[in-house]
Amino acid sequence: MSLFLDALLDSSLDDSIRGVPPGTAPLRLRDVGAQGWRPAAGDMALPVLTLDEDAFAANRDLILAYARHHGVALAPHAKTPMAPQIASALVEAGAWGATVANLQQAAVLLRAGVTRLILGNEIGGIASGRRLGALLAAHPDADLRAFADSPAAVETLAAAAQAAGRPPGRPLAVLIEVGAGRGGARDRAAVDAILAAVLRHPGLLVLDGVATYEGAVATSDPAETAANIAALMDRTAEAFALVRALAPERPLLLTAGGSAFFDMVVAGLAPVAKADGNATLVLRSGAIFFHDHGIYERALGALDARRGFACGGATAADFRPALRLWAEVLTRPEPGLAICGFGMRDSSFDQDLPRPLRIHRDGVALSADGLRVTRLNDQHAFIAVPAGPDFAGHDLAVGDIVEFGISHPCTCIDRWRVLFGLGADGRVRSAYRTFFG
Image (cartoon, rainbow, N blue to C red):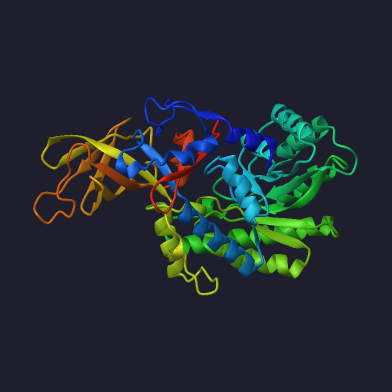
């Protein structure tokens, strides 16, 4: 364990952190599990966001098994939880490395001892390049690969390599980004210009492979999405051949793969890596470890519908949503309406509203079937409550604790400074600090 992670576990939590009961004396992060808190019992200050650790571990093992089955590697995108404890544990469990989106995220993971990183984004101009160089100088053991989708991006990386002051033989590794819908070189001419720019900086930069992101070309039409991704994979393979011609002996990377269409990436690029014989396909899936009750539930359902999850008899339906949001009923101001104590400051809402799963009352868990979140204010959730004796929840009362599933982990966890891990008994057994800046 790195000194940073060890110090993190010794850092103090108090009731300024959502979830920690008011009046709790400051305690170390590593001691949170000894408190015996159960959000379903009202032991914690609500709202609170929790991680089902057994579900998370099962998801981790499933996607790692998938990667082994297909001969690919994983560099989970750290932007989803931005919790160095989690990123470090995933590497220990078998991940190739981690992916970051910007310099702040890279700094956090490097301090945590996660040194093999893909910087999966362009970072800006020369000033940003110098900042990257300073970061690399502070972490001489960093094994970082950075995206470039234009000659200007290459100049930024050259400035970083210059500022890093690395010894001869340790140039900064560049991944040529091919793309559509977001960043990335759009055609062969753009790729050629990037390659030429990298070659103008021998000793500072080295060609290390090709990157893309298939989610940017997805549409609401599955057939159109499949065609778009296939075309993008073809362009990525073409760019890879150009890089290989310029770097005939170097081990190279091909990297793509979010959490919705990674099967199409494997189908399109794994044969390219295998035929090359000296290349690794690295998937950057991040949200898959958390799954959800919304956008990724639908995405993995579609993945199974196209029979894309081939892994020793497992299916994508075996992934389990691991995040839960817990909140209390504050008021029943009129028939058919309950107000719960959470809102836009606590939950994602860009890809569906939270879904009520269970009602907890006096130690009994009741079904929440029929309840529906209709809208959110900053710190209020409006819950439509059906009328009649058939409502399985037996109506909602002030003080009931409602357990919600969320949609889109990436825009939910970032609202929380601490994510609490739950064991199978529903008690908190760990706590994860997040570092979203």
